[in-house]
Image 1 (cartoon, rainbow, N blue to C red):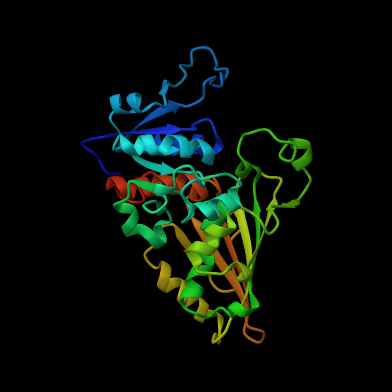
Image 2 (cartoon, rainbow, N blue to C red):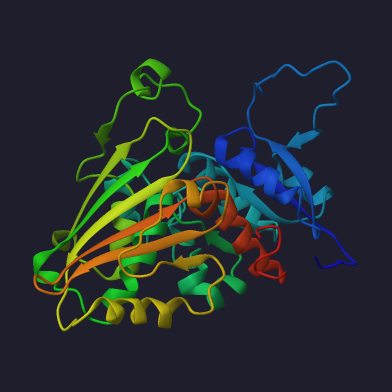
Length: 340
């Protein structure tokens, strides 16, 4: 572990949410930062603590308080509408923002409004926001002042299909089908009937069929058209993890190792993408509580069908871990710090 002579103060808004709590946990092991908890609620949640336990200190999520703490980066683990409200003022105060919501992931306000069903109130920031998928945008992230942390589903989908699209070995006329499953934490902490225990346990259901708000992230970063990509999300009766089964038809591929070579060329030096031998695929247990995205596939040369399996932890590589990966790039730390 590196010894840093100077520790940077970083703030976390939304630290009580699942992704926010995971973020605080990871940052607490980072030798280069001090974590400041920022309270944005007018009536903060009061949780019970055992006798003798000192609850963490929080400060208001105001620009004045952030300046007093000399924050270098603020993470927004908040809904999109809250991020839209907070981000412009934080950036104006010369503090960098890593936003875990979908507020700044899409390139134009019209696309945002269509998929998020609300008006974008800071369209002037969309042009400078950098999509925070380090495997593809590392150099741009280093110099960014606003990083749009990717959604959990698009992270796995883009890591799985973009190398094959770039190599032009997918028959796009046949379309790509992404059958995705996530643990319940992906829905956040806000109570709802569909994520209550009795609805989820011993059950398995589809949701966001065709119109899931993560679809345009995949299209925007893979270069696919909407007609070429079919996505369905499913809710698993588990706490965390994402597994995506992606079906494609290939062309100009003779054997499975040809596909493996494409992935190896793309991810040879990537610390958080792990590949499996042809015919071997990851499961959720392999990636839970880690910042890895694991990718494996089956290939049938006779029919040119490839079935790709991508697995990740939705709270880590799909959210908080990737946010720390982005922070490491922005602040000049080793990219893997606190993540391996």
